[in-house]
Amino acid sequence: MAYSGDALETVVSRNRPTRPPARICLDENREESLKFLKLLRFRQERYRDANHKGWIQRRPGRMPYIRGYLDFSKIEYVSTAAALVMASYYERARILRGETPPTIDLHLWNETVFNTLLEVGFFEIVGITKRPPELVRISAGARTTMQFVSGQGPSELRAVCEGISELVVDTFGSEMPELMYLRSAISEAITNVQHHAYPADHDFRFRHVDRWWATASTDKDNGSLKIVFYDQGASIPITYPRMSLGREVLSFLDKIVSRGVGSEFRDDAAYIEAAMTYGNSKTGSPERGEGLPQMKASIDHFGRGRLRIYSRSGVCTYEPNQAISRSAYAGTVGGTLIEWTIFGLGEQA
Image (cartoon, rainbow, N blue to C red; front, side, top):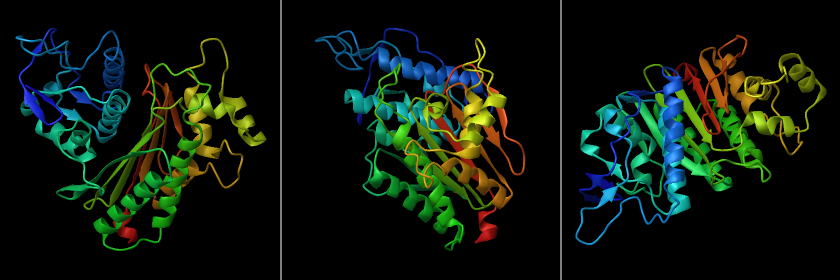
């Protein structure tokens, strides 16, 4: 059974469905999850060509058919971060092609997976449900999730900041003195993406839509705020070295970047660490480019939390009062993914 928008119909698949990994989570199952996300990007790009008239093909007197599909009913768990990345790919397809792939056998999907995708706003993108004009927050027990916002400009940026502020205040019951600090860090991070994530001279493998995506959730039981932010841009390892970097940053990079043969992707995490530690901005303004360092500093301020950034083939993780850990991974997240989690907000309210 296929949902194409809000229309339900029976279709035939000409090929066996592709089975995704049971757990799509970059923390727990990174390699398999990245392979799945890459496949999702590739399928959506490939199927747009070669006399393509729609995801569902129709001929007079014959059963509608699809070429193949990813069997989401086999997924047992999807993290919020992975769900946001998946949602961004479907929105990209809708923007570039005017349609999204059909949703197959929705009645067989795992309830937990269904709820996670519902919380981030996936079903509004594929047209099964209508997206209201205001931001939606969905509560499940102590957890409340703000559906994703995607954007390019200042109006969407304001919507994210206001939505996260309202989420925090509604969860913890009062205006926190640290709230303006958190808003500033979020605003700076998104502004940096708007300035340089999609450089005109970069050769993108897949067509892009110059957008970013963000969602957030709170948990009243553990006093946490989790913000997930994603763009499909050129990535930090590409854009950061092109900026006007100060002596301190250049000295730092000189010590940790190998620049040897075959080191390009291995050193991706070094540029992420520099961006987390020193910040920077394409504009050259000292007031800009401080989003990632502010996020990092907030972890120390609250004493509990984690900042993890994936970009191209590198990942950096920071936890309170510890050195930033760097590593490389096979594959790419297709841009830059930021997971920022803070605990103890209820204690500060």
